[in-house]
Amino acid sequence: MKRAALWVILFSMPVRPASVPHTSRPAPSTQFADHPEIRAALAWFARNLAWINEQQSRLTEIPAPPFHEAQRAGAVKLLLASSGLEVQIDKTGNVIGELRGANEKEIVVLSAHLDTVFPASTEIKVRHDGDRLLAPGISDNGTGLAALIAIARACHEAHIQPRRTILFVADVGEEGEGNLRGMRALIEMYKPKLKAVIVLDGSGTDHVTTKALASRRLEATITGPGGHSWSDFGMPNPINALVRASVRFINTKVPVAPRTTFNIGQIEGGTSVNSIPYEARLKVDIRSESEDELAKLESALRECIAAGVRDEMESARDRTKGKLEWKVEPLGSRPGGELPANSPLLAALRSADEYVGNQSRVERSSTDANVPLANGIDAISIGAGGTGGGAHSLQEWYEPAGRELGLKRAFLTLLGASGLAEEKAR
Image 1 (cartoon, helix red, strand yellow):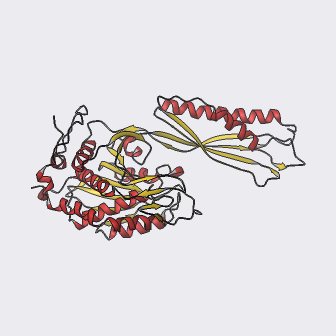
Image 2 (tube, rainbow, N blue to C red):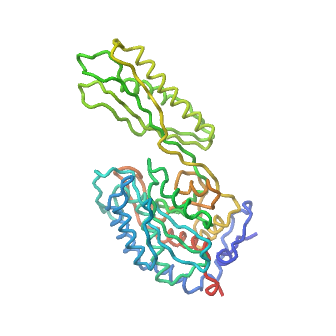
Image 3 (cartoon, helix red, strand yellow):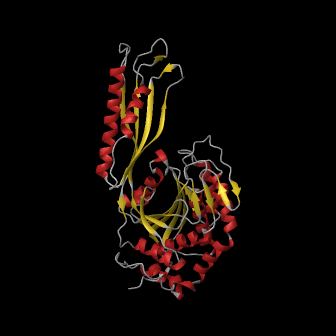
């Protein structure tokens, strides 16, 4: 049985059984290939790759640390507005550009997150090493934002008229302690109308995320009286307790299957080298394919913090000046979920892959797609083309070679989910 041609996906959205093997790649529908508006949009990408690269560099150099994405949001708003969209910035900080469809009661979202993991003090200047672009955040998510802008502009230049309304969204709060707040607000606002969400996150075309990896972010805090390193030597020390607890926690055994991970990402505390601190904190990221394993890891963290405090108190020479207190609080929680194997959105992605001659694997990850998937809304996360590496580091890089394929793949998947207006379909 051959896969449905992309033209059929666009206008009838059939549900294809998950068991159909990916063994052949039939020629694309001549009807689709000859559709003038779609051909014009695909051709626009090829002619404007240099401009797209420039927008990626420019947006990357605008700081967007967690909870401070407004400056970059303003730049994205202007770019989307110049593509003929009705654009607003909502109260959460999301930039939302609307391409009105023939059916305004059904919505498809194409999104890319605005924020980076880097603090405001990080110097961000895009450097060129041959064809390679280097800068913190250049791939994650400079690539996704550039693709969002490019696809919106291609739709405008080619006069694409969708059947379902398309929202082009640059959202806040995907990274770190943002806790997916931008996507959460978007789903809350549009959920009754939402039919599909396509997330552009990073580079590549070799994968499609259809399974949402559940995760929790936790902060452990230990407090004490504090004092002078000489005169108060021997009193309970919160940092000592945190170190004892951390050593215990990093020796926690986790299963290979279901895959489960943890990371101590930040440790803070103290005021000076010659002061016994009155407070120490650590932040932990835990992830698992199993909610049960997540619960076990969180419980293990609490037990380790309690044991570290207990050990420090027992080792203290002077307990007369106060004791240690501790707490573990949630910083955020990302829900799990999974796209049905017979989803029309996945069928659209597979047909787009066939059309551009690409193969991609299904994977599980933690992205903005977690939120719609957890709410029963079809969603995927894909790379936007090209290649990148060093994500979340100062050595992050991006190479635009292969970008055009990624743009076409994302654009055709979007049209597969939205369809074209009936008068264009005839």
